[in-house]
Length: 211
Image (cartoon, helix red, strand yellow):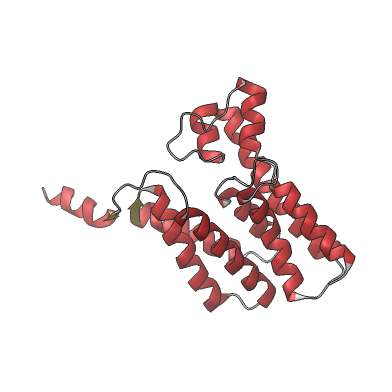
């Protein structure tokens, strides 16, 4: 593994460690968006909910960009054909977001950053499409609550589909590593665990139509 690859991995990790929810909430409101949240997650949802539209939108763009930038530029200037190198460059921003070096290794969940990473694989869009379809399915067809559990099920489902559909070993390994990091982050979270509920939406609509 050459020095250029190591620079991309390290750069992705330290870029990923920037928690934009904390940055922009301090800039706009001089407060921490996690202070009044149930999960204390410095991510996009709490940025929108507790910081407002501008804070949320800038956080979303920032979190996606820190995933997109290392992967996008590595594929063009990394000068490496190693599948392992690509996998580690993909993992680095999520690892940085979850284990941020700037906040005592206590970061967020890495969801928006993952979307940015998969967007950085363009024009190869299969992994991004799989994750988007997973979120849409568990939002519009089978609704799982709370969001804590929906995130877990979505990433497990996406990982299985990636194994079946993705042929690039580096991309597949990178996503599986990301999934592992996110699942560990979710299962070790100290947020309050609500009872899991699964609802099939079209059956509910048919039931209401028949009443």
